[in-house]
Every structure is written in C-alpha cells, then in structure tokens.
Image (cartoon, rainbow, N blue to C red):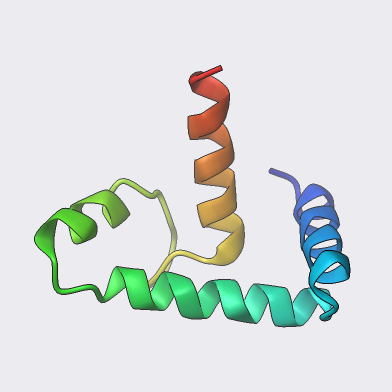
Amino acid sequence: MRKRNFNKVMNAIGKAEGISPKEVEKEIQIAINSGFDHPDTAVRAEWAKVPFHGERPTPQEVIEYLYNKMKKNL
C-alpha cells in the first residue's frame, strides 16, 4: 500500500471519528502494541504472521497485511 493510499485511509477514519489522522495512527499503534504483547500464544502466533520491519508492526504494515489478506479471500 502506498503511503498516499494509507494517508487517505487515515484521513477517512479520522473524519468519521472526529479526530486527526495522526491521532488515528497513534490509536492503531496502541492497539497493535497491546495485541503484540498479548500473553496468549495463539494471539502471538497470529501477530507473527504480519510482515514488518523493526521491533513492532506499524499501522501501515498491519493495514497493508490485512488488506492483502482480505483481497485474497474475495
């Protein structure tokens, strides 16, 4: 997913929620961190499927992964 498309998604979510795109991205990162640190091994195994660079997945990496996964199931 291109950065431009990601920004469009963040803008649309922010507009719908009445918050800034940066706040949307921040809240998504909080949710990612919570899931990534989950004590349940099954949950952690699902997070291990998400390709990412760095210590943790970014919102863009997670959204791209989910988008591609959904696209395959259509």
